[in-house]
Image 1 (spheres, helix red, strand yellow):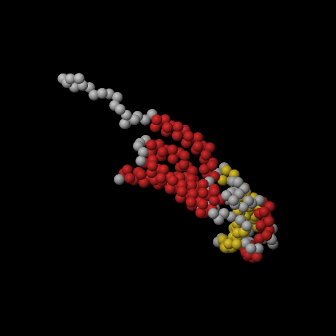
Image 2 (tube, helix red, strand yellow):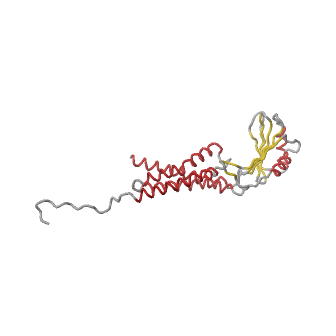
Image 3 (cartoon, one colour):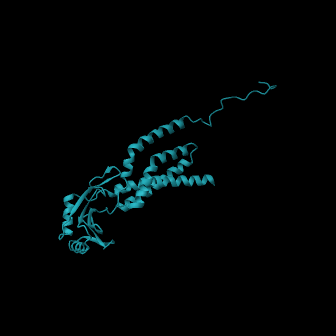
Length: 258
């Protein structure tokens, strides 16, 4: 029973570790091809949807996560935010809704908030979100998630989890110390990235890319993993062979003939 529980734990460990890596790879591939956003284009969108009001300030932010700059066509690569006044202006919601509907923007729906609801709309690969806060109203312009992002991310996660479970199942069938060495290598190489990936997904979902986690950890994780692989190879090659021939012959019993 104890051996069976250990095998199940190994399968779950492999599924969680490689499943997180698969999710990250899927989110990267599925997020490729997003609309490239520039500061000029973001300002034109803001002027199109809120032409009657001038922003008092704005900021354009290039995509940067976990020490990695995102490419121009990566999902989450950039966003712009424009601020309107220093107090919430609820009339901007009606203005944005009317202008977005008349200009063919799609997926119009309310965004709950205080002191009043905002609005969200999407068109030409861009997503705009108007929100109201105590410090004023803000319009956020960002590339929309590609249609394939969710499906490709889930497929990557399932493939990674299945591969991890299969790999660790094969490992559990090997003689010691192979399972122990694999557990050590998996924890060192994959556990930090897996923990950050799962926590990021639980916090933000797919609103933010998670694959930069693995790239930022690679400069430290890859060399350390290679060193551990070398150490594991040395341990395995120097392990005594229990099935080898006996080195000593049985002594002759006194009184017997040779």
